[in-house]
Image 1 (cartoon, helix red, strand yellow):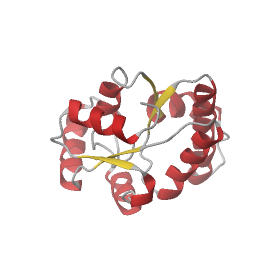
Image 2 (cartoon, helix red, strand yellow):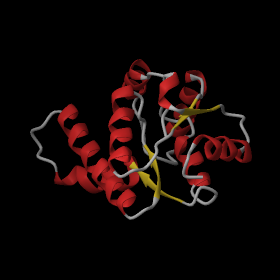
Image 3 (cartoon, helix red, strand yellow):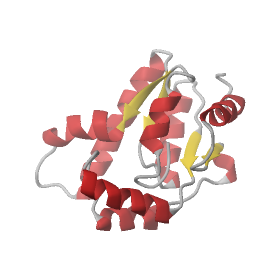
Image 4 (cartoon, helix red, strand yellow):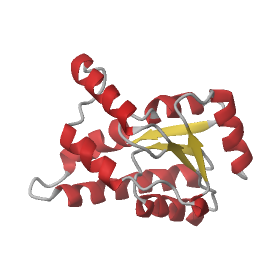
Length: 168
């Protein structure tokens, strides 16, 4: 999964697990919350992120080794992040596919502001949101991406994913 915070990645990822027979691995819920408390207190945010992303790729590798399909719910906004995930998949003779949430920044920001009031999910600061927007690199043609727009129907998305992935 790739896209801005509040672009709909988690919502879609949850809906895709059953039709794609895939296991969902969430950076926020499964990786960060588990590993954040184990990190040294004196490291930078970048070092923290790099360590936790490496842990995520280890989990993904373990699942792929077991022959499972995996949906990794993370920002994956930069091409280098997606490339590391592709390399992990390739190492275990698995294909990879970027599911890019093509949600306009204005929609994501409106969702963030609504969440700031409802607190239905974790809070994302305005600074973090601006940082993610500045880092966002839309998938290149050679990244084998399925582009998902906010009003796309689930059945259509599943069909596009299955036709884009040799595993199906």
